[in-house]
Length: 256
Image (cartoon, rainbow, N blue to C red; front, side, top):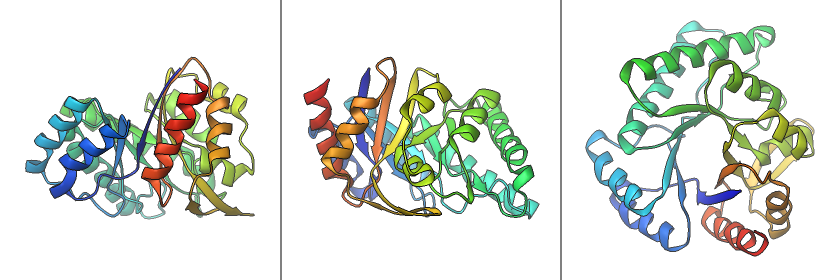
């Protein structure tokens, strides 16, 4: 098992190269660029960021905007969601990013049609990626609320049936199911490479409320439970993601 760590943020483009160097010095080999409120990196800003990340051996990924819903009742909103993901893929490709992570959508009034609608949306996006000759992959994420599409079973099925990648968010899984069944997750995702999110999380009956700082005990429980035959990236999304990623790396280096 190899596990790499990194935070869910790169920050401003003006400081991006220095930030990457700082991440490298802390031992991070992954970084997820947050496009959650929109794609903020311009084409001309991509080459130096890509070059620096490659020099340092830091694997980049992208988190697409939160306002994505491939199961919207309104067809034009589904199309707009696909366009947002595709734009993330376009810029992500220029950055040399490996994945675009996204929340697939809401059940809403189309609960019975949600899986087929989201699967179709992903296949449409993957077709454009193929046409463009891009290497980047899309990764629907396990989600933390019971009224939001993104159960372990749903994301597993999408990955197996479409060939897309996936993001296992352990905090979301805890909030959704009130427990983490590692054996179940390992069976659901037999792929050798895992892209994961992790942090502390506050949750209630309906699931996720908010991300909170990650406790050392939570890191220990997670890292001891991960399968030994996977290559795993863990992106920390807590409010103190840099400090928490440092803690995760420390725990990993003690137990590996």
